[in-house]
Amino acid sequence: MTDATHRFVFENTDIRGNLATLSGSYRAIVSNQSLPVSLQPLLGEFVAAVALLSETLKYDGILTLQVRGNGPVPLIVADCTNDGDLRGIIELGEHQPLPDYSGLTLPELIGDGVLSLTVDPEHGQRYQGLVPLEGDTLADCLALYFAQSEQLPTKLWLFADQHHCGGLMLQGLPAQQVTDLDQRKEQWQTAVQLANTVTPDELFSLPANDLLYRLFNELGCRLFAAREFRFHCSCNRARGENAISSLGKEEAFALLAEQNGKIAVDCHFCGQHYAFKEEDLQRLFSGSMH
Image 1: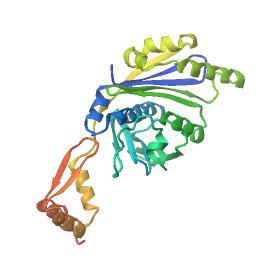
Image 2: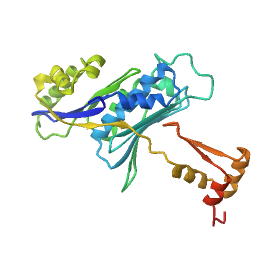
Image 3: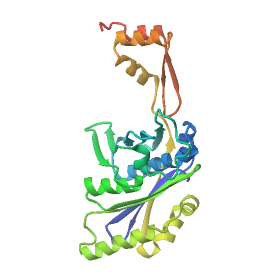
């Protein structure tokens, strides 16, 4: 199973983990972008991270991981539904693109900005958490997010190339199995040290149970059923209509004239093109007094 997450726990500890390996869904996401090769792994890290986080944060709706700033790469977004639908984009700045983006830290690429984690449930309250870009990598920033917002020790290892993306996540939980602070600290440090040895080759080539045994056999690891993922975009024509409606009748028809009789609404996630002509706007605003 090449597009899946695998939850696991260590017996007799308060530590849980998650593995993510994505290939087909990731390649579909990248194929819809006109990205420099040097930026594709960064998008892969965001896609892998949102897949990992979707197992950690229970929700019924959409989980969005986004970073926005004023640098050469002002926007990166990856989102995931509770059903496992993934998508993601990177938008480049309007100024002259860099010849090569590799070797730059996340803050150097984004500039002054913040990382946000947003849960849009189908029912209930929308939640958003923000964290400054104080780490060099996405994994560093997410560890800081969980330390600040959840007060849970959390560490991520994220990997991506042109064909695969994935990662490993460990998280300490409130004391239930183990209450001794020194023992809890020792167990956490041991798990992190073992996880530090993981390589992209292992992650992308080994079945989950083989990888976990190779990494953590001394900790007694229990693996749960896999959860599948796929690329799917939620855009549709109705959302384009909503966007045009939000302009108001007068501004929408002015835009139609400016665009030579056709308003184009393009989805950046999947490349889908929606065109709206005068008869579409007449129908859209029929009965509207504005």
